[in-house]
Length: 316
Image 1: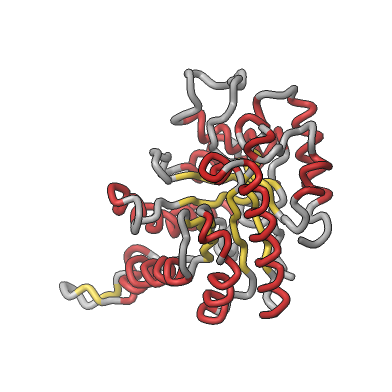
Image 2 (image 1 turned 30 degrees about the vertical axis):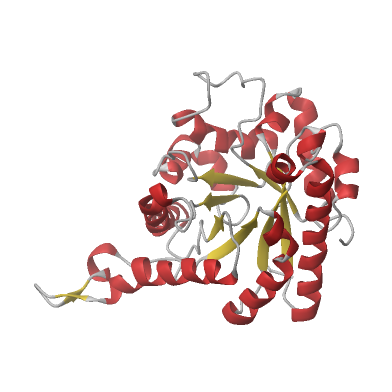
């Protein structure tokens, strides 16, 4: 098992809510409200992780600085990257062609966020951000490519000399951390969910990670393939992930992306036990916007606390 805390609840920016929280200043949660939402998810609702989603939408590139500036007391007690987690979802440049530069920009932002965290926690602090989610993963090469791009574009240039004065680039911009990123594959389509075990095995055999988190879509496949098929695909993917973990001896921690409506997964504050029993083997579940804002806040907090305490429930 990984020595780090594996979050059980991940707040995600899926706009499936009918109600808006009182603190939202506009018709949708955007801009500085999105930054506050991350703090709200941690401090008020009790989520252990928040997805910072750069797929198909703009994000604030200074989210960590703003969180630390505006909520210093909370983040002094709950360390980002140790006690609570901020996980970036990148656009997949192989599919989302218009977002290719956003993909690179988001990768390049990771060391800056970690510099801010070290300024907050001290130079000996490790890493606040170290994982990224890659949507539309269909092959192990997708994951390996992201790791190589991060190394060649973000890490290796700092070890090159500036010809004008013979100094290394890192002498001026500092060291880069992390030196490598953990990539979480997001399996979304029928073929990939069906074959995810083989993708996981080939990736682990090449990359040799100490652990792997995998993201299994449940809500979107329901729209594409129907209710019954989406349930069966999610359960099959959970089973395949467990088989790969046992065969390779590497801990694998599945995340499931499910909405509150029964059609989209039925992960609601009023179906915690039923959901956990239905999808045995999950370690992390997305807490989408409807879960957070369409129910009484005390009920939401209690449900999230229960998920944090009960997951994982059994084996897939």
